[in-house]
Image 1: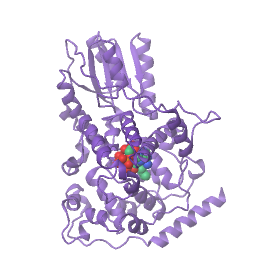
Image 2: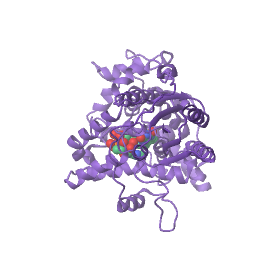
Image 3: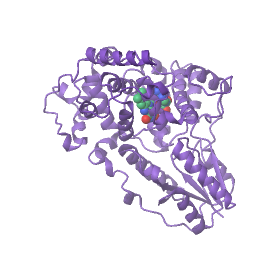
Image 4: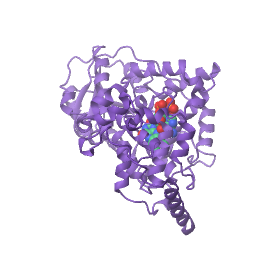
Length: 470
Ligand code: FAD
């Protein structure tokens, strides 16, 4: 009897406890991906990037005499259908932690178990399960530093080795054709522009990690905040998002570098643990995804969608650091971390716009979209989250540009209108954006949409009024 391996955001062969356990069972294995409602609802760039990841993973499996069976529909019904077709003994999967996936997986597990079938879930997406660490009082951590102290003192399980061979079943069930799923449909013109910026699959992810550890981790702490420094950060968020690399592999590489005396390695490990913290928070307070984490901020008079927010989306605010970042995201599917903080601060503070609109735009544009990190990042900047920047912390995009992009390399790289001879990256933005936005590199770069000092004062006044009525 074969076992069904239900792949979701875990498209890899190494550092994969579920896969190791499945191989150890000695059974024939049937890898499956189900395009269910949750996967259908991914943002444009994320869904497209998932499609690329699935294609690459299917190729890897084919190279081992295996297949990735693709099916569309409600997960439990699809899995039960496959069990009926193949006589499988049951299903194994790597856990996901967002509330929608947890609800789905819980009901799948209950239904399969009620039928007397194997239904087993495994760790592997995180260094540590979100419930495995608690404060001295038995609660969960709301502040990063003590969380870091607690988890780093504990250490993490070592990555399990890559599986070398997967036993194939004698008969394969039918599979959908990936092209028919049209995973890139919502990307339209953006797909061709964005494609060269993706490094897809496990092999690419492991190479990326090696390159980063060999040539950049040493200067990570010093350079990670400067968006013009190409290659100063690992770029691994894209691969982590789709499980093309396991976090324990990254942690182990970071620790080895640290013990060899690479200056930035500990800082790199600390950043990786911010991702853990995001999952810890989402597990214990899932409302972080949809509502102000601090209840008192729920009634803050954020503006709903508005024309200035739309100009922000278009990268046409006239604030060069903000626009460079928004264009970087549109073209590459990613945005530098410092830039994420600056554009989020500009939207939520200078434009007083609801952080959820920014969160949703990121969800639509990012190929490294991660529900937990995205929500935590937005709430941190807005001031409504746990361990958040205090409300009076308003990033000044002009000051930030002077400090973190003093030679304007980042701004010139992404804003064609600022250069006499703009580069390919800056120009490609105009090939990617929808024609209805009516943007052209020939038009003049806009004057600043708002006066930064006035915007800041307005935001501070509103925040202060809010604070005194609490
Ligand atoms: P590196 O600097 O090389 O760091 C290594 C890894 O550590 C990253 O790949 C990531 O997994 C983790 N990490 C680093 N910084 C953070 C952080 N602040 N929070 C959580 N994990 C972190 N990250 C996403 O992966 N997906 C998102 O959708 C996302 N949305 C964000 C939205 C906002 C408003 C903000 C402020 C941050 C967001 N982040 C998100 C976090 C961070 O910006 C990215 O993880 C980082 O830029 C990825 O680049 P890298 O892989 O080169 O990171």
